[in-house]
Image (cartoon, rainbow, N blue to C red; front, side, top):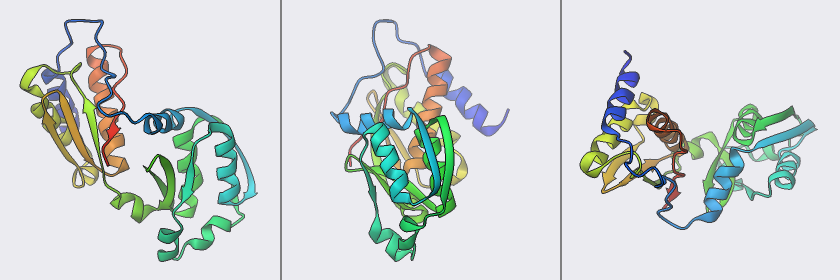
Length: 213
């Protein structure tokens, strides 16, 4: 068994099903409706028809479809000498029934750009700025563990992260909460692993991470 597989197996042993099936893991620790709306929007299907389009034109299509707020980090682009990437009219991408987060990745990678979520908006920025962007999210894992097993579960999840992601991650447990600090890659990997653990217990969605920037 691979180290990642072993770590996930350990985490599933530490996790326990809740006795009361009526309880839910989707407890919101902090009221952040706009953040959760962005997360739901990124998981929604999208359609894009870009032919020699600029980044601004592409974002206009996404705003019209999903009613999400997009902002271009002009300062970061200028510092990286990529300020002209926004107006380059060579974006060509036609997709349908593809998750918005996947479409964003396909759209931004040729420009060597990425995105982060902050201040209730999706910020288009450089890859370097996205990697250095740190945020703390709080997960309510009361439906996955009981009592004092949160710290052990947090350590198992941290160990299971890819080594490149693990270096920039800080994960700890407090009561029934898991506190995760890191960039977007860290939080996406943690969410994925919690979903895998949760699927091993029962078929119920993993709680949405709540930002505490």
